Image (tube, rainbow, N blue to C red; front, top):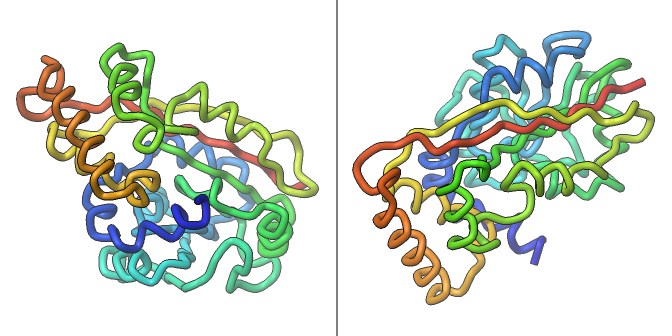
Length: 249
C-alpha cells in the first residue's frame, strides 16, 4: 500500500499544484540555518511547493522528482530551476555537491536504508538534511473535529503535531548528530470547496476505491458546511510547518 500511495500523486499533479499549501518561510530559514553554503537539493520535490519557498529564501536550488507528471508541473511553474528526474535512493548529483538536502512532505516515502547513504554522499561536510511537513493544528477545536470526521486516509500519520513528532523521531542519517525538531505557525487560505479539494489530493484518498472516496469527501463537505468557521466564504486553515533537521558531523 505504501508503494501504491507513493506513486499515486502523478494522476493528481495539477490538483496537487493548485491545492497543496506552501511552507512557512521561517521554517525554511531554520532548516537551512546551519548549512555551510547556498546549494540546496529539494529531494522528492513534487510540483515545487517547497522549491518556490527555497528560491524566495535565496537558495541555489536543484529539484529532483521521480514522478514525470509532478516534475512537468514543477518545470512549468518554475522554469528557472534546475529540475531532474530521480529519487532519494538514486540521486543524479555528484558527491559532496550540495550544502543541504531538504524534502517537503516527502521524507516518509524514502527507503532510508538506501536513501540515507545516498543523501550522505551528495552532502558536503557539515551539510544539513531537513524534512519539512505541513500539519494541521489540532489544538484548534474545529480542526480536531475535522481530523476525526475525515479519517486517517485524509488526515493521518504526520498530519497533526503530536503524530508528526512520533512518526519522525526515528529518522536518522548515518554519521549525524541527534535530530532537532521544531514547529512554525503557518496557515492556508481556503474555502470549504477548496479544502475538500486539498484533502482529495492526500495519498490515502487517491488510492481509495471511488465509492469510498466519494463518501469520505461527502462527510468532510457536510462537516465544513455545518461549522460557522468554514461555512461562509474564505477562512484560514490553522497549520504548522514542522521541521526535522540533522547536520552532517
